[in-house]
Amino acid sequence: MDGLTQHESHSLKQLEKVVSTGMKSFIYVGKALLEIRDRRLYRQGFSSFENYCAERWGMARNYANKLISGANVAGNLGTVVPTSQQPTAERQVRPLASLTPAKQRKVWENAVKESDGKVPTQATVERLAKPHKPGPSVNEAVDSEPAVRWARLLADLMTRTVSLRKHGLKSLSKRWTQDQRDDFAQKLRRYSKHLADMAKEIE
Image (cartoon, rainbow, N blue to C red; front, side, top):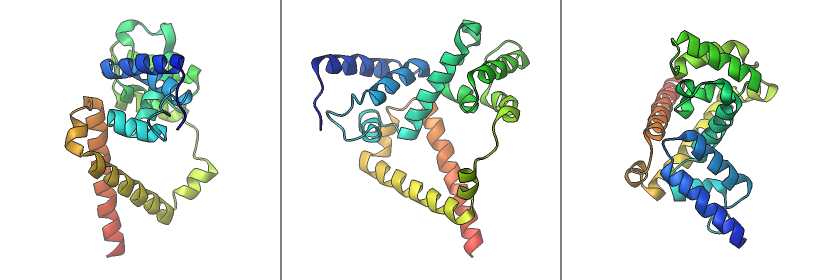
């Protein structure tokens, strides 16, 4: 693995401090993770960003990318959104990730208005963002074929299971924020439903 320069080591230390102390602020955490990923500041102790997230923070790369994406969306909302109406959790802006910055601002402003000036829920943002989202691409259409979809699901599930056994769910969950716990619990419920549906299909 490549070693870090003195400047890079200092940057990594400062960025990890942000991640460690700022877990409740997804914007700061997302920005810190983005810099660590793009500058490959993890490379001295870890072979990949995915391993870094899992072993250093007990965080799946998928969730880390959501935090990064959420921080970018929040940045796009900019100063046009008053402090009291700015997103407080990554899941609130998740439905905006695939939209252009202009549409992100428009949908968020409409969601705030519909929520009587308060920070809107994910469900409200999702509903208002849906008409603005692009249709599925050719690759997405191919990936939606049942055989491919189930294969991807099972491969992902096995990867996650191995990771959990390796790192220990109980020890990891102690370091998770409530958003991370909710996100993981939602995935488990979704996997359970998919697997139950698969069982019915092959019976």
